[in-house]
Length: 268
Image 1: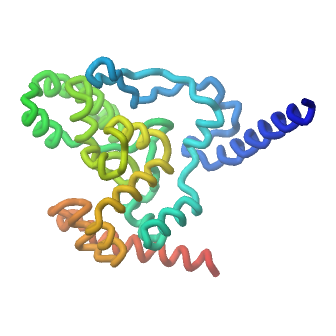
Image 2 (image 1 turned 180 degrees about the vertical axis):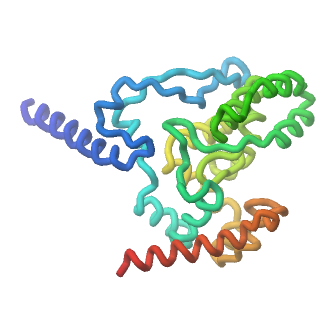
Image 3 (image 1 turned 60 degrees about the horizontal axis):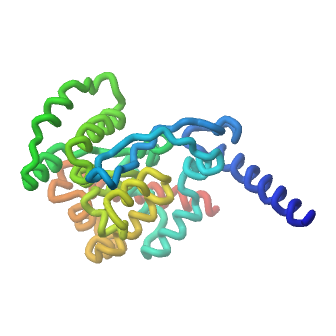
């Protein structure tokens, strides 16, 4: 009995020590585990299955340890495992992230709020296909002043309004996380549903990386193009036929070379 109690106490404090170590890597620069206890976080990914998938937003108390793990950025081990699964070098993964989300290479602006880009054209087109009126959506988004919000918060505001019209179409019309994967690709990411896909995108950078790996493994042409470093082909398949306009292919080349140089410096 005493041994069991000692083991439980030891396990708890070991986990707490691990959490405090992870906190130094947190996107939110959290100073210690105590600062996370009872913190209220608006999690945007809960859906009412009994009400036709209508979204509802719940303030949930996230456990301090769970918060710290969720805040922890992708580690070298995470990158290495993903690179091995895909048969590419780590520099390729970092290059794709940088081109999709910028030099900061972050999947979140804050806990539970991933980087997104809502595509209004896709949303309106898909509403029309389903014969759903877009009138209220178009009226409501005019009330939002983009100058008063960050780019990501503005996209979340638009997404929330779109979800009120149709949550599934809204989420499928959004590009999510570090790799900016379109929600309409949720099946190719081996997600159980669009809601499962969104939940994972909102959980951590590790789950975003997992979805990207699954996405590539289910897209042979795209996967092989990345393995061959065929930047034109990959950019075309990943970013669409207008990839040349933004120079995705050349940006990938330069970014990949830079990360290779950085890795060689660390190895010396």
